[in-house]
Amino acid sequence: MTDLSWLGLGWLGAAERDAIGLSLQVAATALAGLLPLAIVAGWVLARWRSRARIVLDVIVHLPLVMPPVVTGYLLLLAFGRKGAIGSLLDQLFGLVFAFRWTGAALAAAVMALPLVVRPIRLAFEAADPRLNQAAAGLGVAPLRAFLTITLPLALPGILAGTILGFAKCLGEFGATVTFVSNIPGETRTLSLAVQTLLSAPGGDGPALRLAMVGVVIAIGALVLAETVTQSMRRRLGLSAVPPSRPRRLA
Image 1 (cartoon, helix red, strand yellow):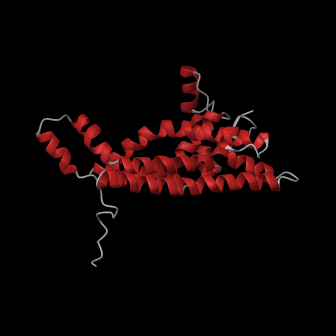
Image 2: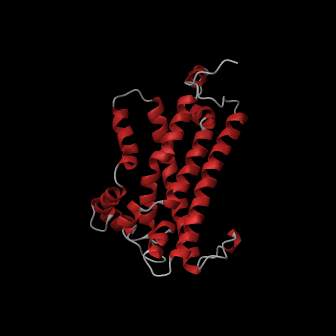
Image 3: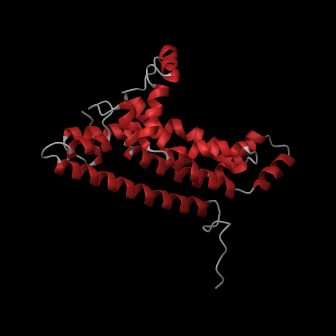
């Protein structure tokens, strides 16, 4: 049983604490794998002027408009034990996604992708490219200029995307239940536990408690994302108003 007493969740039942503990594990793993890809995708979408950018833009935002069940089904076809990618990863690394918590992390990462990339892309767009041009004129290598100039300037967007993505991963349901089912102790995250409790006699009370935990996490994530973003923008000396928005005259 997952010990979450340090989070002050001792008032929840063992199964409820297990679901929250598994959700935290799934969300942290998903975000660790997703964040580097989101930073690269955000930079490409912000700086590329090629028509190929449209293809990447569609791929990134597709989980946002596609039914989550369809996303989960496609993941099952690709990353299942008999799927083209899943069977290859199983043979090479012994990595299995279908009906495992690792699959829940993969599904959560895919569904959170648009929410993580969006603020990162906006942050890269707001960073002045002339700083990189000046650095290049002084002989600074492009990778070093990116790591020392562009990336720090985009940090508010990266932090906001990270927090929003973590909250999204905690609450993911549709793609997860389709891809990895609802297995107690293995893939039953917070959202799946709420659905299970609602379908069982007398489960309304525990379901409400878990739902309230989910609401508190979601509100906390939104407030924290906005607070961190504004704080980082002030530290970096950036305007709180996006450049494209005209300022109102006093």
